[in-house]
Every structure is written in structure tokens, then in C-alpha cells.
Image (cartoon, rainbow, N blue to C red; front, side, top):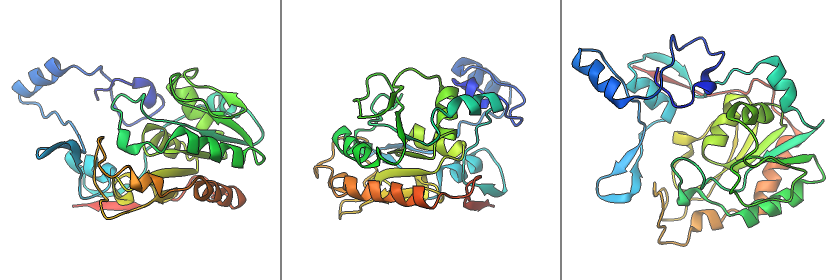
Length: 261
């Protein structure tokens, strides 16, 4: 398996070997007759460079199908942490992890942004229920939290903090997928860019809004003033978070499945 992030697969018995991504090497393997799979689950819409062309099923099912797998698959990712990593990730007796932006991602999507001011409002509403930890990049806007870890954690340390958290509140993107990989309950602001059935997880509270223009699959350049995100109030997100805190799900979290023929 080729990957730019081998640390995400530490302790995972599935890959027999991890290699750095090397397009020339992949090309050479193909010329020798080897089958090389690149399971890209989205592509740019040829009619509009600002839109994605989305798959018709969950991205995990799509990647498994592209890889030639068959049968029933769990619609969730996995990351294996050691006991020591898990212990280090629990910073407080009760903690909530938050993010304020996803624009520092390798592939940023303006259309996924909800706004740091709204996240700050949610943080204030949750501050009496648990200690708040902010995760993300050093350049992300700061939130009113108890522990600011922006830009200060490795990927595995971030995963461990999520595993030790009672809840994650954030955007659809890498941290939401990482939270699901370590069975951290999450409230995910998804808006109306894409259907939950493609990018969401059944164990999460996926907060959506679908005006007439949704789902748009846009990356950026929304001509409708981000109506789908503006329709989601901090009060609604905080209420979903408080509801999850009041009735925490059993871990490991339940997950949906898909059958690939």
C-alpha cells in the first residue's frame, strides 16, 4: 500500500507493506502488468471546475468497490491506538474536542466552512459541561477553550485525544473521519454540499440543511451566500452535542454496512 501517512496504519494488520507514494513506481508496475488501484472516490465535474462529481454510494463502499472487494463492508474507518496512546489522549475527566476550520487541509473546501464565530458560540454553550480542547492547524481561528492544541499534535496524538473525548464537534472532513476511526461520538456540521449517505456516519449527529440549491457538491464559489450553512444555528449544534452527552452511545459505536456485488 502506498501512503503519505504511514503513521495512520501503525498497528493495522491489513497492509502487508507500506510504501511512500511514488507515481513513477506505480507507472512502472503497470507496465510490468501489475494491477495498481487508485481508489479516488470523487473527481472534478467536467462541466464546472468548482464542483465535485460525487459517487452514488458511501465513499468507503466506493473505495472498496474500486479496489475489487466484494461482500459486506463496514461503513467506518479504523485507526489502531496503543493503550499508552489512549491514556495520553485523555487530558481531562470529561473533555470535548472542537475545530474551527478545515481550510488548512491538504485540499481545502470553502463550501464546507461553517465559520469560527459560530463554533465559538457553541464552545461557550458547552463550556459548563466539560473541558474544551481545540484541535486543528496552527492557522485555524482560536476558540474559547480550556486547552488550545492547534498545530501542536501529531496525527496519532490527535487521534488519541479524539479517542479520549466524550464528543467531537466539527466539520465534515479529516477530523470527523479520524473521530469515527477511533469511536469518538461526533456532531458534524455538513450543511447541504453533499448527502449524508455519501460522507456521513450513522453513529454521528450529522447536522444538515438542504435549500433548493443543495446538494451542490461545490468546492468553493457558492453563489447563494452559503444558505445551507447559514441555516444551521449554534443553538441547534449545541443542542445536538448536549443530547449526545446526556445519552452517550456505547463504544464501539454502531455502524452501517454496505454489500458490494
